[in-house]
Length: 354
Image 1: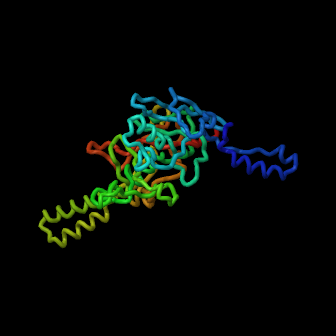
Image 2: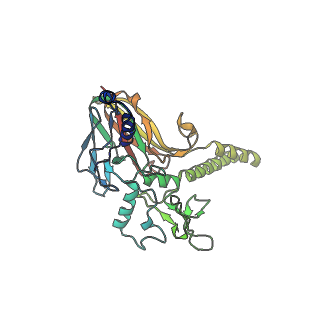
C-alpha cells in the first residue's frame, strides 16, 4: 500500500472536518503544495533502485520533472537513483569484532551501499518514503522540467555515508591520533581501541567496536580534524616566514598563533545551476556541512554537518527548464579533486503554480 507523504496533513484535515456540518464539508478542500515527491515511484521499504534510463515524476497539481541517470560499469551510478533506505550506522559487517575477517569486494560494496543509499534524517526514521540519492559526476546530475517554471525550493539531506565520514571519518575508535587527526584501531598498550557506536545509545559492551566505512579515496578524516591540521599547517608556515624575515622567536610564535587562529576550513557544498533554453539563469550554493567563518553569509555562523532534511531555496534561479547539481568540499587530493564522496539526497521539489 502506497504511503502518502501528505498523510499527516490529511489526518489533521479529516479530524477538523469531522466536526463541521455537511455543507461546510462539501465546500472545503485540502490544499497541497505543488511538489514532486517521487510518490508514484514506490519502492519496497529499505531498498534502492538505479533506473535503467531517465525517469519522470509528476508534481501534485501540474507539471513534471525528468531525472537523468546512468548506470556505471563499476556498480555506481551517475545522476538520480531511487531509495527508501534509512540506515544510520556504520556497517556492522565491516567493523570489529562483528564483521567479516576478510570481506570480499562484493561484501564491502553491499555494506557500503547500505550507507550510500540511506538518508541521514536524524534521530527518527525517515518519513518521506521514496526519495532520490544523487551522485554528481561532471554535468550529468541534472533534471529537466516539462516547461520553464520557478523551482521554489528542494529538500536536501546528507547520505548516511557522508554524514558519518564528515562527522567521524572512515575509522572511528576510542583513540584519536593527535598528529594525524585519524582514529587509531589500537591503544597504547596494543589492545583494541573499542568504543561505542556513535549512533547506538545502548551501553552494552556488545555494542563496542572499531567502526569502519571504506571509501574509494582511502581513509578520510572528519571535518574538525581537517580544520585542526589546516590551522597547524598555516601556523607552521607563518612561523617559518617570520624566522626567514629575521624576526625573533617571540615574534615568530606570535605570527604563528595569529595565523592559526584565523585559518578556517571544512565544508561540503551543493551548487544548483539553472538554465532556460540553454542559457544560464544563475547559481545557488547550499552547505550540507560547514564550520564557522568558512562559508559566506548567511552560512558563516553555521557549525553543522546536516543530519536532517532541510529546505534549499532555489527561487532566485527564476524560471528554468533545467537544473544541474554540483558538489565541492574542502577535502581535496594533490590534484585538487574532491575526496568527499559525491552524494546527496533530494526530495520535495516544489514547483510554482502556473
